[in-house]
Image (spheres, rainbow, N blue to C red):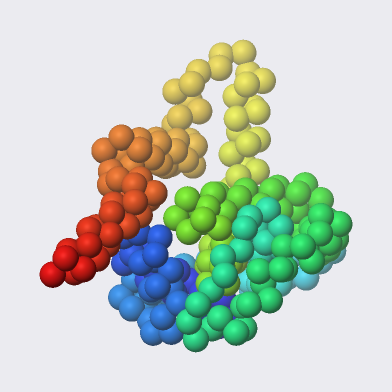
Length: 261
């Protein structure tokens, strides 16, 4: 439950905080709030659902299936996100009840060298290869690192870097991403083959490709993501740094009034 605690604290901070200082203050609070409970409940429900969909474990070299191999692989590759973010992002010095435990992490960026990151990646890739073969494993590692990179960008924007709770939440998100890919890999391969067959045919039509339910759902998800990104960019709340500057200006004005009184 170590990383799940980070997921709950991160959800509370990102959901309830309006500025960077508020987010950090909420995240360092040891109590779990509404957003944290909701995120933790959704994480557990999605994880159980994905593992249940994978079914009974089947152990075979390069061609494993079921929940057992998926648990081992997803737990391993998801933790690759932590050294990746520690190496590529700034670590925020924490305050609060958990700060003595995380104080050494400020210097961890210099301990996690690129060589050690390559070793961690190689180990994760090798384990996944033993379970699922090289092609699936390469795609799986790519998916996890891509999700970790997106989370790192979000951490830079909201927090100015990463911290222990945020690393834990990233591991949980990457674990769900890995389980989702593992459970959907057969459908992805079947969809890819159907597209290849459509291109090889003489009468290729885009409508035939869009008629595939998996492709249509993916296309609609991408459109929805682009629309949400556009709304957040052009219509949504002020930029995080503008919020922080406004908060500092208000605090300065308030202090000045207090001194005048």
